[in-house]
Image (cartoon, rainbow, N blue to C red; front, side, top):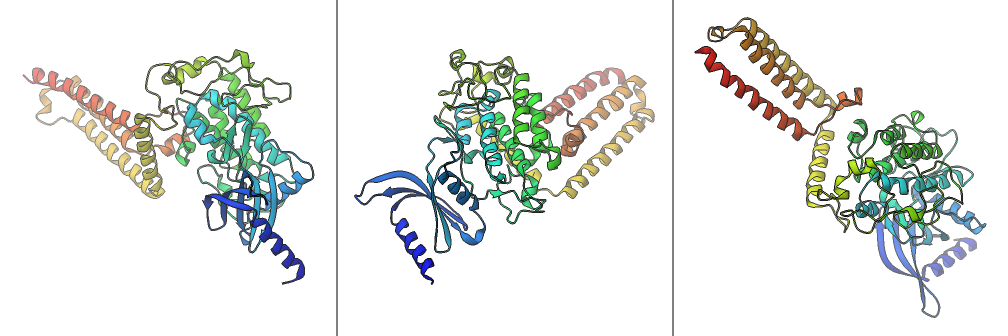
Length: 471
């Protein structure tokens, strides 16, 4: 070992002895994250801090060293944690940074409940945070792991954490060297379809916007079906669709464009206080207590207390008619999906579990099997419909006693419509929804209930009329 390497190694060991491990927060093959306390020579402790051990051969964590260098040169970042130290220790790179207090975006949504008002409060600020990564360095930093647990909200601001897999954009590169990320929020190109760019974070922000509006982790089915939901107004649905396009070229060009589009959509939904521009003289007032916002909201004095029945601990912008229509449980009425302690209510837990179970089963079925099933259902329905036509126009000996209008009612109206409704209920409609985004959507249980009630009524009617005609 050379003299300079030995000196660096001894220096690293001396730094290590200055910290006491308070808790291990995360551990993976490439990274260990600890909450530590700095211990002075007199035994006094300061902190807490975050200490990360990142395997040097993993190719991760390069962003931390650049941030540390920039901060030591006097840069101050509003939305990123402060890096105290970066050094090498053995085969690992070590990063010491501030411990960010507050709650995650995931906890905040569960505590306050998802809504357009919540998104109007938080999402523009989140866009500004990502813009600091994209525009605050010589080359854009692509976070690549934007998700609710990596967004911290407190009274002092909003902070993006966990930049372990973040990378600098490299002009001319065809692909990322390493493919990491959380699949629910990461774009397709992050897993081998091309190099991640600022539009990759635009995709993740679109998924985060859906989480703020719906309170659920998005999946491929939700995106493919066009984000149709009662809790998502049409102007915001259009923003979601463009932000999460499969082809990066069809998404918003950058986060600034996404932010402006969201603010316009929020205004169309009744939040006229939001402005797409920024400035230090804009009014502040966030339900979560974030200070220093640079997008215009109504003056703080104009805020009203939460309506009766709303989740405790949150205040939102004055409710628009759209919000009252979409969230009647928030303004008196049904039991809220989310309780004040942040956990799902009983109804919400059952609904969420069933919805995700069905989605997982559907996603696990191979595409050829789905196509084969749909083909079989359509062919069987066509054969049955052909049989109904023949039965109506060429009745057997028993049916010949009935008048023609009764045969038409029995076979061409009741029988044929029952077959069509049953076929519609049985086929997999994801391709249909993708081809016709505005095609109406109904939960499976509503389709089944309608089919059962229709069959009972129609055949009950035929059973009541038939005997009198045959007599």
